[in-house]
Amino acid sequence: MSNDNLSVGVGVLGATGYIGEPYRAEMRECDGVRMVALCARRKEPLEKAAEEDGADLATDDWRKGIEHPDVNFVVVGTPDAFHYEAVMAAAAAGKHLFCEKPLGMNAEEAREMTDAYLNAKTLAHFVPLWTRWSPGFVAAKELVQSGAIGEVKAVVYRWHNPRPLDMALTWRDDPKLSSSGTIADVGSHAYDTVRWIIGKDAVKVLAHADTITPAKYDLGNVNLTEALECGETGTEGKEARKGNTVDYASIAWEFEGGIVGSIILSHAPFLRRGLVPELELHGTEASLTVDRFHGKVTIGRPDNSVEVIKEVSPGGFDIGNRFNKWVIPALREVMAGKSQLEVDAPNLIDGLKAQLFTDASLESSKLGEWVKVGTVN
Image (cartoon, rainbow, N blue to C red; front, side, top):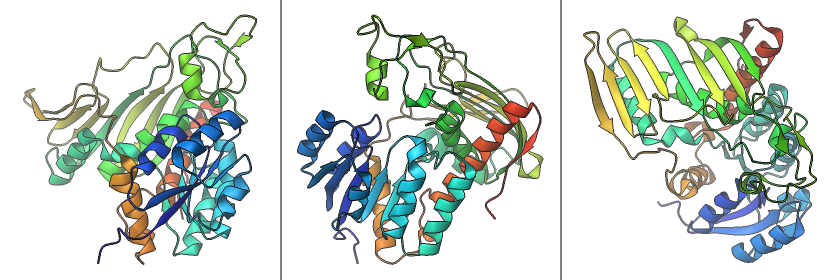
């Protein structure tokens, strides 16, 4: 029997933000999904969003969004510092959950949030670790599982997401709102991708982290889209200062089974994509690289021969309507009675594991020594 007729009433927290806008656009295209309640801080963008979605409620009070009787699926897309209270309220109200990563400001918050949903048993919980569905990484996982490179021994990753020099400050530059800057922002994706491909968790890390982007203008309460588009306009008389969160990190990591390697994470404008492969997996029989920028998955063999084994769409970042393809189907599986842990989709446990890794990395950068990565149990 199809689950497609199961109705989904959505409440979006952070509805007009950098991620809230595209998420809403995708959900509007999903059959049987109705945008019920939208929550955001600024009145004019919120009213526009409510008109676009045909939402019943537009409010700056997130509690009303969660408590609305027609909302059964809460999407939390607010700054990191506001996740915990909203997620715990959604769990108490018996609402299915979509929560942005990082889950919270730290692993303690993330663990409580995860426990609340695991204890609920019948509630769905989804964490948008989207890179699992990027074609190059899907191909890499299939190759690793097939034994094409033998036993994985080392992993090297470069996740560069350069932002322009002339962009404005956002909440991501504020340690009171951002869990650990770039380490949590793109590090959550990168770490989840690797552990998903190789089937191993990290056990310890040694990190260096810094803020290497020059001073940016403080334009007040702007979202990331507005900050990226500001350029030199509207900056006269405004303060320029450096952000206070990490925008660069170089991390040595060790995984279960003695797998070693390193990862570089960056939002700094100076580290650019496309010059070298993003991901390297080195095994006992061969090595494998994933270059999402150029759409190539390459195998290197002990005789130094190199073969592009698969070509995918260049870029690898646009994977279509994510809610229509994965989120809503996964939600409906749980709504129909399936256990969340039986559904093939990233959930709060995966989000907690990512937060344990990013927390350990930030701590290591402060201590200047190896730090063990915490475990879920």
